[in-house]
Length: 231
Ligand SMILES: Nc1nc2c(c(=O)[nH]1)N[C@H]1C(S)=C(S)[C@@H](COP(=O)(O)O)O[C@H]1N2
Ligand SMILES: [Mo]
Image 1: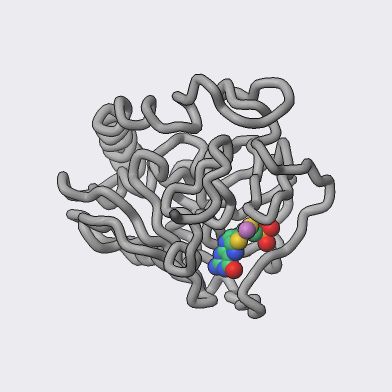
Image 2: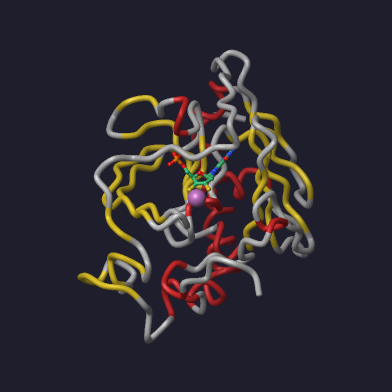
């Protein structure tokens, strides 16, 4: 298959997926709440810049499980499988050959710091999904890190256009301590939903709990609802 044709297919699949999840996305709290909790000027989704209980930082703290895997790009692979028609295992080159997206977004850690206006570059999860074709009954994903981390997200959150698998921050390769060579970001949810050192994305037909979700953190993680822990 030649490259323009491949790109056309991804774009067509992307539009279909967008249409399939559009209504559900519009109803998610981080865009739909009419009384979001927080302070500061509205962000691009109409939510206050600083969610309730958060403080803006300039520094970028590092959080991990006490181990930072070092994966050279020649050895790096990203598996995308589960409830999909076309499972893939991407090499670094194949990953960089996918459509690239630049975006500037905010990062809200559940430990109460927020870092605003972070310039990223990477591949949108929507384009990854367009490549693998989720089955009609797929509802969630589980993301796995090279450090044994895992975290679950619903598809109406994961397929939002600002959810990216980033390899570049401020024009430089993403540092290892922040999850390089590639991590996920979820600007509309607490940042634990974005796996650093991402290794595998599994599409699921029912929700499962990831590492922190299994230890009392919220399934849904909505910053403007102070939705930190499960009830
Ligand atoms: N693989 C992996 N991803 C992870 C974590 C982790 O320990 N391992 N920590 C999460 C948490 S709790 C947060 S707040 C962010 C922190 O990202 P940072 O260290 O780049 O600030 O990554 C999330 N993703
Ligand atoms: Mo966190």
